[in-house]
Length: 218
Image (cartoon, rainbow, N blue to C red; front, side):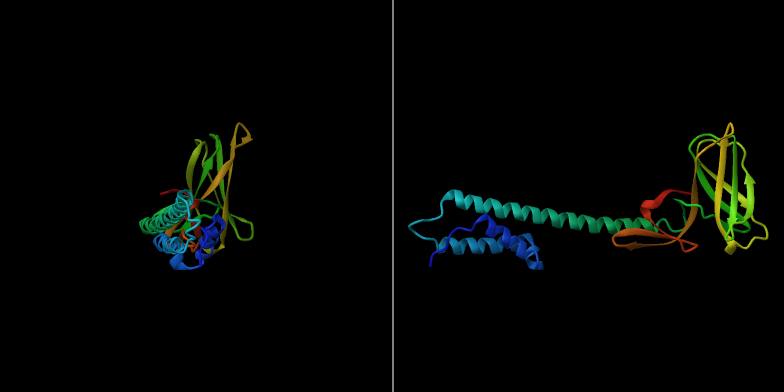
């Protein structure tokens, strides 16, 4: 019985089917299986119509291309795994530091509320209000003139139950016109972990956020 040369569609079908099994995703295993098939094909070819050099070269080029792609995929997968491990290791060193994340939830410690903001431009008047869960103002501080960029505040909260604090707001003006102020929450990092391949940080208050959400540290 004689065998005809493998067509491109047959080789593509072989590679697609092989991807379903772990051993066939191994570049070396795929190449070994292909060579076994090729040797069998050469041994059973029609002596009156043998495979020419062009056909043989074409099939060898195809399997080398496929093997190269598989090796590249494996290399990228290994790099992703190593990067994840490295990121987790770096994350451990962040425990105990304070992350800056976009948000308007203040940290309340020892009857003082802490937070920050980022001014789009210099302001001649800045006021920070700390709000309660019922929408009431629990504390206010006037910071006066402030330069553009990141700024931080402390609002006295004597006699206020921290559990009742909900958020803070920043009102900034320059020459009577409003200045955009992006609020920043301070999040003391208490724990780190990996979730779906991404580093997750957890603050001392239980807030969870991604490593890519951090805009700075203190």
